[in-house]
Length: 244
Image (cartoon, rainbow, N blue to C red; front, side, top):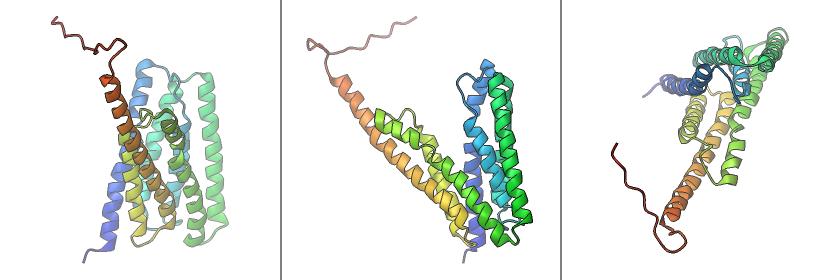
């Protein structure tokens, strides 16, 4: 019989690998910032939010808050470092206003995080009480991050185009949510990882359904446009390629 702990660890490792690639997915954006030596219209908001989210999950996974969560600590610790690298690059190439915004937001996040840590350690006693409070906070932030694509989904429905919703990112988000949902269901059961990642899994499914619907419709529209002759009934012909 397969040991449940071994299965949980394997699924957690798979989840860590997927999460690692998700953390690295904005890398091309920051390569572009370095190359152009300008942040242009890019915003630091998602990376600032992810920093706080990772920090809370690292705290949640500590033995004195919620034991037996080393995989949660490791991947969110790595994510925290990656997000700080992104913000450092943004800070270097941002204008004065952008730099002030990053510093101000990080200061607020540091104060909030420190306050939660102090209250948890000084007021709450025992891992049960600590994991309850910190787990709820982590879930709130994780759910916000998982439902953030709602605006993009609304745009897909409005424009009937999936160009603003990359397929591979939607698929990876779904697999990531499914992995961590499965991880949470295996003993020892973890309701806090389950709630946010269960919502993330549903969000991923909805994104993939939307992609399937509107991608298929786009292909049909393109085929219809190509098949429709212009005014006068003459078919459109592609020019022959001319050798150099």
